[in-house]
Image: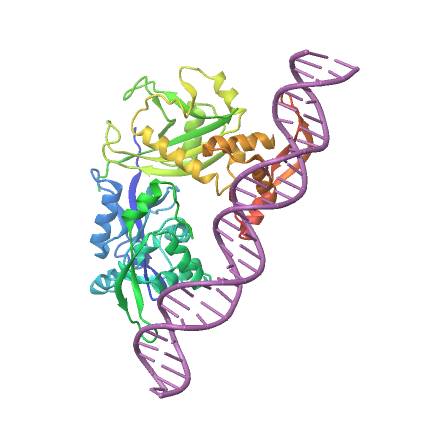
Length: 224
Length: 224
DNA sequence: TAAATATGCGTTTAGTTTACACAAAAATAA
DNA sequence: TTATTTTTGTGTAAACTAAACGCATATTTA
């Protein structure tokens, strides 16, 4: 057989801070689309798994440490790459707020966070990939507790609430939201407080992943 | 670059009839795994899309006409194929009951429907693919109206109900289920009846896809 | 010291889901 | 021919869940 198809991976990496969802993009150094923005990614090596390829490319191109990774979709249209037939397996990655600093230390012309409300023109079919990733993220946070992966390990309730209002694009009743999450019993209440500006200091909470897996096995499902 | 990765597609095709969910398997003619059962599939041609490759392979290997197709997941472990590095993009397909007959006309030693309750040993990592496909199907029927794709175009309510009890693996209150589905307004009530054995003849219903898309755009979601 | 701001908790109301019973239309058995 | 069995079709009360809403508390700022 003389199949000539190349295989790449791409990662849509989301970050969240202060009411803004951002995505990590790189400025392409080489043709095609030289100088344009693109989702980080690259070709898979013969003897590495797809996930290993994503993690390698992310370290090489952005220096960002990923906190959560899941496969999104495989894009395989025959004309999606001007260099020839290239199929790409796209992933969605989530990082915690401190990952923003790592990128700031890198060459700013090469890697940058963009708010998903103000995206630049993208190379290849990366616009379609990014849109699908946003839909996945918005959908998934309502039935899997992946929102926590975008927050600091310890967070006040208002951070979680704001993340959800941002992601879902609608107001949520603060009190009902709190009750609902508390009832799921996947949050540990810590004996710590933070004071962010004026107002009453907030208790810190932490997601209890172990407990979540336990509940999931029993068939209890997370749902917002 | 000297990437040497081959790309294949595989399709887990589900069918349903009389309370049994079946999956379409082929008996392999050549090595590796010669004589073992496998999910239909094969290598992607250089200038065909992934979906076209799935449809081509299904026609070539099984003669089955697919009614619904969606991408499932891409399996890319380095050791999943003894012949070398092969990644496969797996799809889930659904067919209507009359497709069963088409297969019966084909060589029975090559293509066969297996109840998902009594599956044979499978080649490659096809067991993992099939399990993922079953999870996808079970999950998806609760929030997308894909169950209709497994039934005849016109069907009595009891058929739909039985499909759901089978797929979800639990009893559903017949009256509440009917009310719930009717309330979604995606079924057209026809002026036809069928008499299946003893008992009162049942009205026939038909899924109104156009209406569903319309409702979906308005944000109304299908949910069982 | 008062006002402003954000957290934390509780109650009432509306809506949805679940549980459950019986009439109607046909096939089958007596 | 009639009674019995079988499956379809509809309604209603109870239990639960989600939505709407008010106020006290702890801190910063004026």
